[in-house]
Image (cartoon, rainbow, N blue to C red; front, side):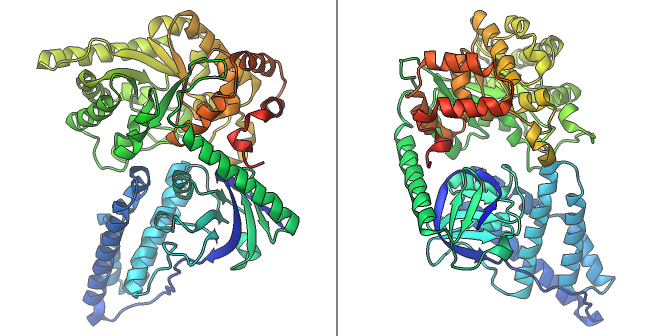
Length: 578
């Protein structure tokens, strides 16, 4: 029996199934006598204290990216409004403590589930997880855990909440499969990828199809769960598993190798990072630059924006670590699929086409100037390249330059030193800007292709909208023509251009981009070894032939099929287990 879902963390697994049934609070409508109200309030507050303490203990053992997942949990458990509502239901309406907790958390979870923004909708899972933590301490029962499995297993669950995935047994979890949907930005997906665990989410009727101890195979490249595989299928998936493990081992060995094509062309490998924490900048030993520093994560999960001094400290650290290599610092890119509680963002029917990125900075000059001042103050610690997101025209570039000049003048007046070689660049992610790349190249020092947004704007397909997923086509020949035009324009101007979107870490796309003249890729640390390994098998003439061909093919499917066949001998990561 084969079940299909969404692959969110690549890999292969073969073994027994462990059916995970999380804590389910048996909460019914109930009330407490007048004389017991105080005790119920105290019991609620003690349950909350224990839940917060457990959360702190869990966070201590996590990497920075994983720990950030629990920012929302901490905010929820400390929320004064919900605390007041729970206490009021107990003291005034005679609700029992557990019924009051359930009622209030369920109300807010339901509200979040109805919000259009997919990232905010995911907060509903945080709300339910926090509620269940409270109720588990209220009942005094032990919450089921994935922290210690008796044997290696494929974990099957209806859904996995953040606390489930954060504490899972790293040595014994072979793969994760869930019935609930979840995209690549879900908590389970983020943690699975960070730990190299194959994961397939959104498998219909999973829980009615699996049994504890059942033999299964997981193909997290194609998104398949094979139940009770035949001897022939077991042999097939064992070979896929052996192949994947061998390729993963080889990829790790390529981490420290200089990135070159088979015919000796040097390819600059940049690192995409979200903070200056040690776990994030560990890639400094293997990369030529920071190709994208997502500064918006400094603003998320907090009640007030980071101060100028706080930002200076963060920027100085990453500039120092990479000095004299460049650090491309993208200015605040909030809006669309990214929100920040500390900012009063406008409510928009279509936030991807609204006030986001540079547009938001223009409408909040003080916020923008604070970040620019911090970045320029830190510039003395390394090679700072400032990159502007969501740029649609030369007008945007020129206005941003005025703000940068204002920030420089202010710092000079305040006596702060600055580097005199700070470069100014743009993300090319709006088609209108890509089509005037020749003029853009005369205005800025560098550019980076933001392929995620460039694709959704070019294909008119919201990349967070599951029903429209088929229309989001990174391999569309028009995408390669558009990117090729921008690459050519910057190359003719003698200005560097790179790519920092998902296509930068995709060997199929990277091969075409190199054929179009790109010589700089920026990607996540987990993809660096695989990309270097792939590049070592590719020649530039081969890449140029790929580029010529794909631009003449009619559909995205044709492009993808052609590239897979043309590069079949390159041991592509996505084919490594096959």
